[in-house]
Length: 582
Image (cartoon, rainbow, N blue to C red; front, side, top):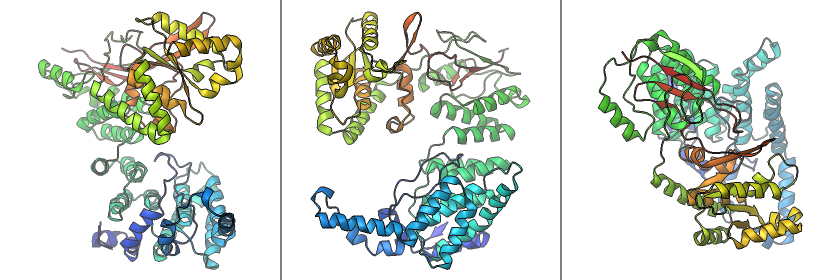
């Protein structure tokens, strides 16, 4: 831990080089976070394919940068209103920065990061030191990233990889110490990279201490910050410390994802912590829902083990279990392992009604709380107004209030291009007519199209013009304005109308990641309609009548779904784990 500017004796005694951190004034740390920190390159803790370096555009040394803070904060003049001479001056300054020794070094280190060339990066570092080039936070983070990622690459018998790995591990701590000596303020990326070096040195305790220190420097840890310590403790089988890291994550508001939960699940099974196995299964149910093949295999191995056969209640309070199911909203009870004896474990599938083909148990459909939908609609509206022209989106909301709600909303561009090279209004109209015929109210669905799609290209065809005019006059067409992202429009229309959404869009890009992993996947599962075309014609794949999520039944059996493609064709694999109740 840090107290004020200083590390506690226990930490400095164990890791002497960390005592150098006390040389960095905390004021410098906080100022650096306020003014020079930018979003980092994001990737998962278990992936070392991309550099963890800051994206601060200015390659100046932090100390010099801090001297110009007042100027930087007052120079927000719109580009269009700045004099031509000032624009030219800015351009020449940017070129000067790029061509400076610091700028050239930055570019070369970025290339090394792209190619994973730690040997060349260290050579560039030594050359820069010999020439007294002032290194910035970005320079140091690029070097630490390469040292830490090189130390985690498997050699596969390649001597060059072994040498690079050893060299990166040997020089990494030296570079970090030099960074501290130079009073260049570290950020989250710095701590995370050094934590990875610590784990490569088989010291997850040091990695965990580094995460703890981040808060003292005003740096909130990220999920990737905890990865080295958590996976390090799991790898050596230190369950108490791994659980401590997991608890620290929760205290910091960092939510574990599938790789972290899967590692904790395997560790708990290996050390026979049966209550923790149960807890991690429920954490996977709540936050992941469907699991990757690797996690699927860990769960399967657990239920096939002798340890699993020995755990469970022989007699239990049925009413208490049922109350737990009601309180949880269905699909689980949380009362612990039920039953005794060996588990019957099979990979299987569900029929169209959600009946297990192995044990004949019927899965349930877990309802969504209406209040959650209302809150999500409000959050979605706020996000859309932040990223779209607010006046345009408010106008759409007013239009929707007048013409809605609808039974279905169609992502027009996506539907028109399924299996097509060109925009196909005939295909779109077939989907519209099929949805209308299957709608209880026989009302036309709402078609969302970008304005360019209704004014140019195939829209100029006379038949298509008549079709568009008919939809418009029927209040079933909305053209989103130029420059807008129509995804916000069709998603908001479907959520606010509480209706079906017809699209083959997998909804996994950055826009949908903003919506979080709690409510949106559940909403999508219950409302998205996918479509396919075959010789038999158009087929709509309606939402399943059961929830595709890990389910724990009243009798104690478990059903675990695997992740599958979203094409609606390939059958989903399920793990069925049951045992007889005597």
